[in-house]
Length: 307
Ligand SMILES: NC(=O)c1ccc[n+]([C@@H]2O[C@H](COP(=O)([O-])OP(=O)(O)OC[C@H]3O[C@@H](n4cnc5c(N)ncnc54)[C@H](OP(=O)(O)O)[C@@H]3O)[C@@H](O)[C@H]2O)c1
Image (cartoon, rainbow, N blue to C red):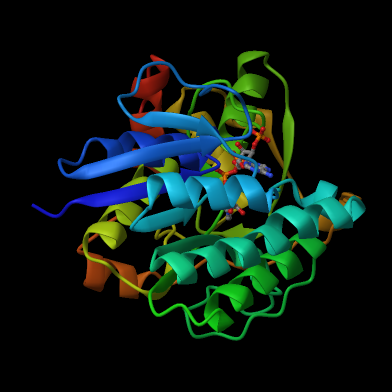
């Protein structure tokens, strides 16, 4: 059995909670969950938890010295794209400076670093993207995530991985931010109409599948860049329509629009999405289709579905 001590940052977030759950179930894994809060936002769980603000180098150093992780997964980030555009200092501190510190500590302690990144490192002119396509971010969030990637690559670490993902949906406990599917279900349950863009193309990712792929990456000790997302390319409008269908709401609640009608603080890549052949072939991983992911989510939420 492979014994690994795994440190997870941002453990109270959507992905973080699923990573704690997934990696904590594997015999031989000793998982330490960390987050900004004094205690975990999720109930139960057999893993240890300690508060950790990744922008605090002293706290980071203490955790590395006390826990001596074999692997660090950095799922902590400032993820609100418009907030990153308007509060650039905070964004850079969390998304870039903290990653530089994490990479330096990982190198000193011989720790593998797995850094989460995003389709927003691309401009969205030519998606879906492979791992080898050239990034060109158009938002401050995207720039910060690319700068973090570059710190990891140039840190001198011999064993690092960058996991890029896309439009993640799913359920976790007491989240500070909602996600697209939970937001849609809330609107539909109130019989409210939503206007969804037809010109933003993505490969939506079910968080349970993402955590599964990341557990494989840790187990197989993969390094380098990996695209981990759903396998179906679709517009945000089509995603909303399918959500309505699977959860039994009227299709008329979803109205098409395009991005020119929205004024958002940060620009979004129009056509992103990923080609995931590398992950499928190297990890033996197959994400659910959107309808399968929604049906699985329905079970978690205790809602009837029509997948
Ligand atoms: N969600 C998506 O659609 C998506 C798409 C592409 C890439 N990603 C990437 O995937 C990763 C995980 O995202 P997610 O969806 O799980 O986002 P999330 O739910 O917003 O989780 C991020 C977590 O980081 C925490 N955090 C923020 N600042 C911190 C700090 N200084 N120290 C420690 N923790 C801090 C947040 O705490 P609070 O809860 O207190 O705010 C939150 O719990 C991120 O790197 C993100 O960029 C996400």
